[in-house]
Image (tube, rainbow, N blue to C red; front, side, top):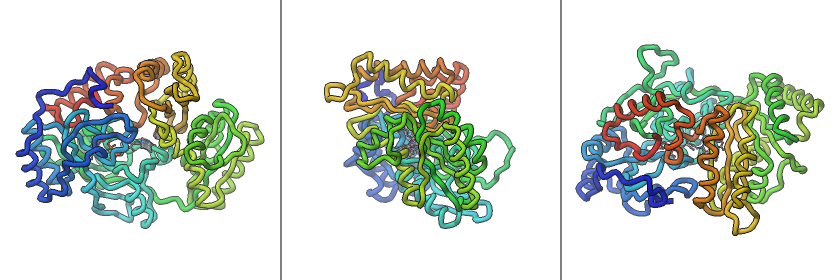
Length: 484
Ligand code: FAD
Ligand code: 2HG
Ligand code: ZN
């Protein structure tokens, strides 16, 4: 969808149009014309879901914080709008331009700065790819406290800008806790160096927190300092089949109680999501019989025998109590990765037949899954769901991070249409509001949800957010048309 599909969004005429003299200036700052990209820009203009398409004519790839500062200062003075971009794996259309905004890609700013082997504190450039960070830490016996399916492409800076949650939040908490400091560039070019190595620091407001989850609207993150836990020596994964969502909740209670400190992930999936993965990767499912729900449990600890015993006892217990109907435990690293893939491949599988409408919401656990059938009914009532090409909707599937009260509703479609959008929006947001949830659990607001923040935040909260935005970016050049 290009901006023409959203007639209510108009290009703000206050932003300057790009001129040759601007490009010459940027080339001078970067000192290397290879970092000034004007051709083959589709990758930077189009989002991961192929849902949003901007029309930027320029991508800049600074290699130093100083260059970022000079670029932003110039853009602010000239009123040239910018979109900071990491790995472009965001799922709310926040990382791509809407019109002709300049893309400021952080991908060339990607060095590790330091690692303290005693404290586990890693300092690096924002453009470091998450998987590279984790591989580096693995060699040192540490682990990155965040993990997600896009780890091979997303930047750590991008995940901090989004406040991504991911698969390890249950164990290691949110980035608001593990990020110790940030280096940021403000819109006037000021470099704020607060790359602390301190776990405790109560001197004044904790300014970094407003940048975590600010989605490129307050400044550009150029460096980070993060506390990394020791890498667990023992890891187990169990993949379970269950008859009801009620049983998923009971299993969660038992897992917390019986696995305690070694429980490191508790993910759930419905059968429809597994059907999508099956058609996508053409492999046999880990469990022979289909079940309405599946749960993936991961344990991580320091003593394999201890963890094996605990997991075994837990599984015996939940099977005996008939909470869990069937299950498999990974016997080696390959099986472990294979079981995880049935969870991690759902986002890719849900869009491979054309596209996907994604809703990432927090809800009280008891109501969490009810959203999926409610949406399915709406789409069926609008006669949009079917097995043949004439119907745009393939299936509405639910999965996610039960441990964090976060469900992902993916409506897999053959094509994007206005009718689908009309049937489910604002229905989903109203439903979430009525059930006291959040319309964005971990993916942010971006372009997709900028008009829906009011379903979760109060008027006064929104007023404060707007005041902060005006303070940090009075000309509104940072990631315009998004967030709020
Ligand atoms: P981008 O997509 O490039 O940018 C995201 C936002 O941050 C944009 O608004 C952009 O302007 C801004 N931004 C990027 N870099 C900077 C910077 N240096 N300074 C300031 N602003 C910046 N999310 C979860 O929370 N949990 C998951 O489990 C999860 N799994 C995923 C699995 C897949 C397969 C995919 C494709 C995505 C998944 N995500 C998940 C979405 C998640 O939001 C992104 O993967 C990640 O947070 C974005 O990182 P990125 O570097 O690609 O940022
Ligand atoms: C996940 O948990 C991600 O896999 C992506 O947050 C969810 O694609 C989605 O809707
Ligand atoms: Zn998620």
